[in-house]
Amino acid sequence: MVGDEERRAVQEVLCGTTYVHGPIVSGFEQDFAAFTKAPEALAVASCTAGLHLLYFDLGIGQGDEVIVPAQTHVATAHAVEFCGAHCVFVDAEEGSGNIAIEQIRDAITPNTRAISVVHYLGNPVDMREVNAIAKKHGLFVVEDCALSLGATLDGVHTGLLGDAGCFSFYPVKHMTTAEGGMVITRHADLAGRVGITRAFGVDRTVDKREKSGVYDVTTLGYNYRMNEIAAAIGREQLRRLPGFLESRKRNFSELKARLQEIPELRILDSEVAGAVGSNYCLSIVVGGRAHGRRDELAAAMKAAGVGTSVYYPRPVPHMSYYMEKYGHSRESFPVAANISENSIALPVGPHLEEGDTAYIIDAVKKALFSL
Ligand SMILES: *Cc1c(COP(=O)(O)O)cnc(C)c1O
Image 1 (cartoon, protein in one colour):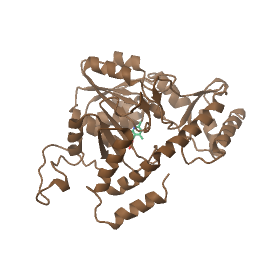
Image 2 (cartoon, rainbow, N blue to C red):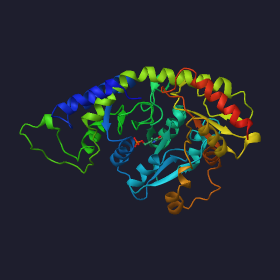
Image 3 (cartoon, rainbow, N blue to C red):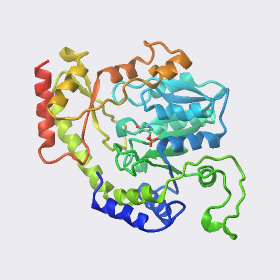
Image 4 (spheres, protein in one colour):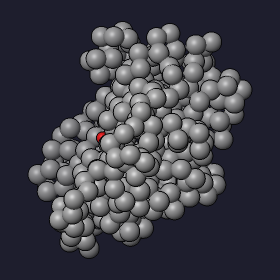
């Protein structure tokens, strides 16, 4: 939801002369750090770019393995692939769709270097358990926080529970910069290095150069910066984020209260002690009498004017690229596959207006009845 504030902020950047390496990106990083209480925050071109920079920094490559949840966006796995390392996929748990933590233990080998998790649909993974496993085996922990802005565990924001976390500002997420992402971490040394590798490996930013245009390149790096226009949108969005989160929570609760009474539907949700979710969407697994008819339900909802989606259309190891490369069977990762095939995500975002949740509930009931 972009409004006049964002438009004005973009206009202001365009009327100036600094589009990259400017004060707005730094300001956005400071604001984001304040919101999440992160010691370090680095704006990047996308969540995917941030994830890639973390694995690049870890120096993983051929022969190394990273634990990756099967039920996630391909970006979580792609970032590992970029480095030439091997994804070891782990199935989801039934109730929340989050990574099945007890299966992580069995997936660890002497080649494992890191564990990645996604806080699926904004529900925090129980990081106490994941960290305990990581500590025992000396593994780095990456949190994909693309769906978990605003989500905390024991009062600690997601992204600060493991070693580093990456957020996405792609348009459908909790807030947007059109394209963009943010890396947060407790590790100052890691942040320092990512600050360099996101900008070609150049040793000093424009403002730190004694002689204009003179710098050295100390390491290999990417062009994964965020620009001032994106950051200007982001700063305005971040100001509005608490309101966005509140309306998501309210819409989610309203939908949940009524939809959980319907026997054919099971709501994906989590009850990790001390966790506060960020209500990315309300995903329901369609079963019982309506089993196998998710697509018909989605079509009926569309006809009623309600946009729905699927998170995600296939477990990552069932995507053609991964099927061909890794050779997993269609029968593998059955819990994630069941969610992909039978779930439907209903909107809870701040774009919903008064009466919309009641309309959605009604539309779901009518659609189910007509099957
Ligand atoms: C959207 C999404 C991404 C990708 O984010 P980009 O900013 O588009 O790179 C990564 N992981 C998850 C879980 C996502 O939902």
